[in-house]
Structures are given as structure tokens and as C-alpha cells.
Length: 115
Image (cartoon, one colour):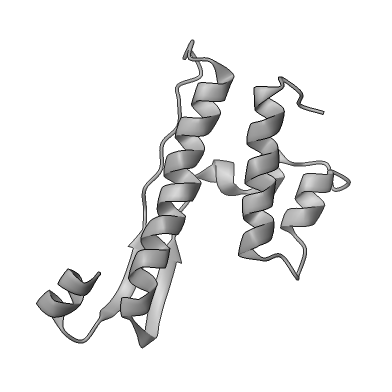
């Protein structure tokens, strides 16, 4: 980030994260691999880039996070009683909460337990 600041001086006006991947439905890759690779790009890398560049975003700058339809809770977690949906919609949701859900998800996939 220091190189960017030196090159462009006054900071970043708009940080737009528009990186994402998805496996094709016909993919034969193991579900654990698909989960880990997809979340490494769509969650972890986006978080890391944001964390690294956030100090360079100007005081009145903006951050834009772009996602596919898969990022819409009504698309994947339709049941309003789904406990993951409830946690994600909590007004007090924190970054640590999101990372805990991510870790729990990967652990469940490793155990082949999707309950």
C-alpha cells in the first residue's frame, strides 16, 4: 500500500472489489476443494485487499463490494429460520462473526456435515 500512496499521492477515492469465482455445476472437484478455493477468492482475498488498502482510502472515499446473485441471502438461505441467515442478518454482526461463520462452514464441509 505504501507504493500506491507514493505513486498516487492523495489516496484512493473509490476502492471497488470485483473479484469472484464459481465452479461450473458440472465440476467434479471435491466439495471441500470447491468451498476452500471459492471462499479463498470471494471472501478471504477480498477481505485482505480491503484491509491492505483501507488506510489509503480518502476520508470521504467509498468502498464498493460486488457480488453475484449467490451473495443474496434469499437466493441461498431462503428459510427465514435458518440459523446462519439469522446470524448474517444480525444488526450487531462483526467481521469476527463473519470469519467465525466461515471457519464453522469449512469445518462442517471437512466433516461432510451440512446440518
